[in-house]
Image 1 (spheres, rainbow, N blue to C red):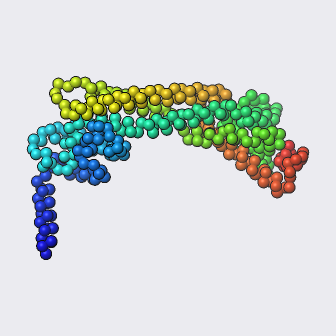
Image 2: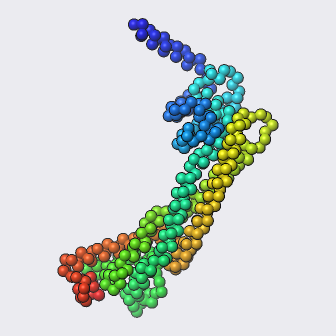
Image 3: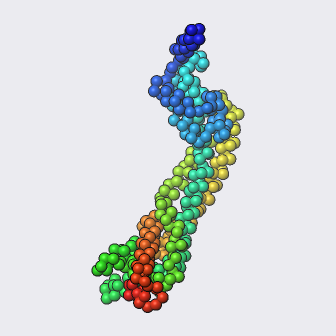
Length: 356
């Protein structure tokens, strides 16, 4: 019975304490702040100190991104400055905003802190993707086996169009060779792609593994050139914004500001980071220029207009051609096994199946 009375008294005391708290925020805003901060183990002062000292061992990238939505807006800062009462009597969320409002340029600092934490992963991923597509473009141009298959394809096309105005073509687009699978014999079972696969197998078998040279095309097809350039642009913009923040914070003010020592720490750490980040982005930019040159060479190599050349579409067409070619090769080999052919003599095996 006494324990029950003590619990009731504690509850009344807690309720009384809550009633004494000064609430400046609307209920929804206060609740949102409280709910989000419930995910943090750190106190208000520890969060404040971590922001001031850029301590990423205290605040993770995810936490910083959550904090960004909680920071006081201009109206809330004015409201907190106008409050002349006891800070300890403020509500939980009001105390948090009061602590954050004490940090000069708080939003810019947190945004800079976020950029610092995410920079390496974003930069490394961009660099890897740029290098990947540039290398793939180079390998496609340098593949003698792919070139050999395309030369046979061109010869086959000219033979089929003999006597027609298309029968003396000097080249073709990558997209157009996908039509080979759609051109079929009367029995509808054999397409020109089957014939091409059989022809390469019978006449130039050393070319059959040409897909090995093109294995990077599948992943490269998923990478948009425009998205790479947009990401580089955004990273440079973040650098520019950080530079402006550093200028703003370093400007002397007439009124005395708090956290002079921490401001010096922020300026020192972020100035060094900014210089390093800018230099590394310049390196990525140079790789992107090389990528552009490789794309131009790729377009010219295949007779395409560089200004209209879509690398993602190109790599997709190459992948489709490889898939269709290998599928047809498997099908005619299976047919060869069923017919008992060995492929060792004229009229036998793959050649014999298609009359090569």
